[in-house]
Image 1 (cartoon, one colour):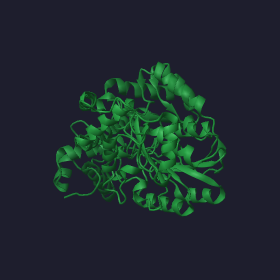
Image 2: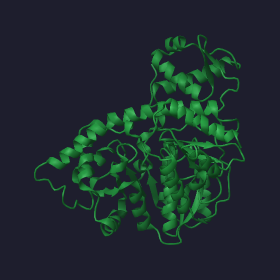
Image 3: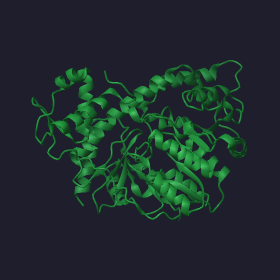
Image 4: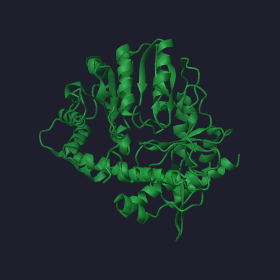
Length: 473
């Protein structure tokens, strides 16, 4: 019997890879049949098919009609994007205009939009949320038509706290503040703990919204390398902290955007302890954390925070309803100051939608929804990677995401992603150029591609068209 936190088919895939190495199979050799693997590992045929789909997406094996599976001539054709060391110097950020143009162009011209990092309607529990909204509107004598409390709707605060019950230090409802999405949570934290001209350590690459927030506040970005498989490079962070006066950090330990990497639990603990001992506040962006796959589905860094030093930010925009704009922050010792900033900026967040999400969480449907969403997204990811592996030219590199909604792709050398985006838009396809994920010129030939749009022949043709654009250079 196979056990562990990862999905069973992931464990089967790992076992098959081990057997391929043990048997020293050569390109073109047949790999063990689906039935044989099912018998040997005592798992269902469906589980083995899922495992083989994952290995096929990685490019390790190829399906041959009526012949089963054989080892790919090139072995695994997926290569991880480069993570070369680079000088770590604070830089002024000038990213807003570029990011705004990218978003506007994709919205106006992107018939097939791989650029917006949000779940499509098919992944949103619309019927259940509609019922919750109607209940919030129809209850006699409720206060949802009045200004809500600045902290948030009491039931929602309670339900958010319940989501952290498995943590070593669960969130106290009194230390949670509901915000207008995850970005308001991050912005409140920055306003609370930084001053103009401060140096802020961020990941490289990082979500462009974070860079835009630094730019608006006159803050400098100190970029720390992220490995597309293992996440933030803590050794590089230690070196940067030793040579720079860093006021705060903003990191995504789970489901990093854009690489899809997740840090190990050991590295999360090491990160929290490093910054806690140095008394350098860490803003944790965990808006995608709930969408971790299998074994990567650990806890956020906040779960290990014995220093009360992590300002934890999350939202329901990636898991429930982007349009509701309901996020939250648990900032520990900074809670009262952030509450004052929230009250001074917009008083509170939409009370009806807060109550609706609180009711939905209270129903017990959320955990089932998240499990299904993770499973469905991983299936989507496998299909997208399989198509990229099949159609994109030699020199393309990517790592299999450990969660989230997107794939980080390094295009062959010499291809400018911004120019590539313009050509893609002319064919009605929106993608995110790597330029906007750094304040420096590190990702000129990278793109981020959202794999949430449901897989269809139209999606496959769009990926094939992207490959044709690349090969036309």
